[in-house]
Picture 1 (tube, helix red, strand yellow):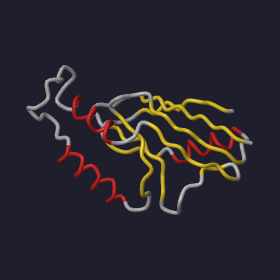
Picture 2 (picture 1 turned 90 degrees about the vertical axis):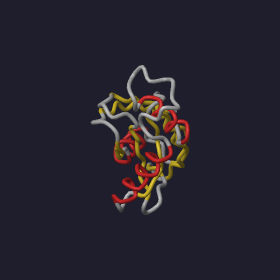
Picture 3 (picture 1 turned 30 degrees about the vertical axis):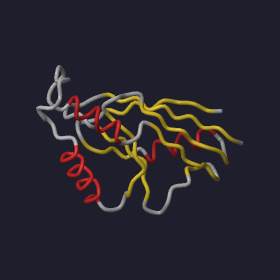
Picture 4 (picture 1 turned 135 degrees about the horizontal axis):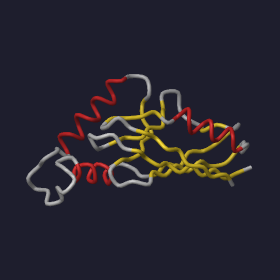
Amino acid sequence: MFRDELIISTAGRGTYDLSAKVNALVLQSKIRIGMCHIFIRHTSASLMLCENADPDVMRDLEAFMSRLAPDGDPIYAHIAEGPDDMPAHVRSILTQSDLNLPVQDGACMLGAWQGIYLWEHRHAPHERHVVISIVGD
């Protein structure tokens, strides 16, 4: 078993490609075949496995989520940390706080157009902690 933690400094709302960092840890683990579990330790950011070739995909996802969980909606009572706080919690609940990826030949078995992303849901910069656990042989 191997475990490490990535600390990702975000510049605010948007997506951050973690693929190279995660694969570097998989390689460092020396595990050739197994499972890689990725977990974000926050309630206002999430993880996703997504298309990594066309930047329009990320823009479209943000446009969709902005419509689904708009900032400043008057239905929210939890506004102590600003108009983007409760929508960030909604976004993280609707997406994923963890991913499980198979490992083969010392790397995550990603598809040709797949990337591992942290999705920051707050507007302000944050420091995000992502735990990587790898098990196998």
